[in-house]
Length: 342
Image (tube, rainbow, N blue to C red; front, side, top):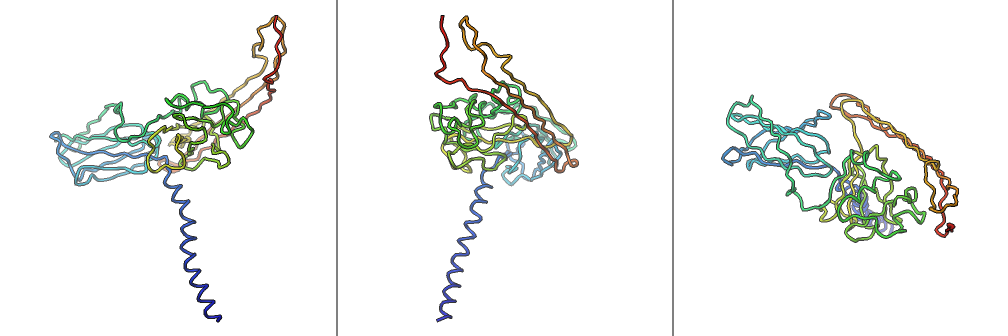
């Protein structure tokens, strides 16, 4: 009897072990699928349009010096996969043809298509292509836009809530007032930014809680009201992409927008920034148009931040950090506060 019981336990353990392994690795695979890296693809041809197989292509990050190399296939096509966003130069060289290089900026999750036309000549001769990127991106069916770091830091941003800039994209609004995603109900992390809309984004008429927030390829969603967890300080943002419809198959979770936030990373030089933000009621106008003066409501908001990036060595890793301090003291005016009229 003991022998049969032990055999039954071994059989049960043998069935449960594969199931447990699957449960452990499925979340990891799902995290790896949602990434903020892009892809560089293209084809190499001669002036007549015939493909040139065996062409050597090098992709160089001009900020860090990191270089990737591939060889064009028999059909002349090439692909650089899982490329982080940044500034790049791609070089194409083949014996008997002039070398060609082209520079471009790769954005978050962008698919950059490049077509090389090599002319006959010495490979020591280099032709630099300066054509601008096409106005219409035919490499993807997704719609949306990228808010770049310069826009994040230069445009007015009341409340220092970076998600407010997503309203610049067609089809994106804050949606109905007082939703759970806005933080007005005091729930989850969005309450810290409730005065500026929290994490509420209504895309193409969908609910404000139907979005997918991703931070550097990592899930940034909270599961209580389906909103954002961490609000990245504007100074630490390199850029963020908002996909409003026809999202790639690698993304799931929600039917609304996909907001991919990419923080600043290191280069081969030390760089950083600092700022100070001061706001106080002494600079506010009187909230009433009446002759009788009404005391201004107490309000003060002081904020400072200093992102810094320190490289560990050329073409190697770097360290980055952002410190932020925010102090606020305010008293909300009740909606029913009476103002004297004369």
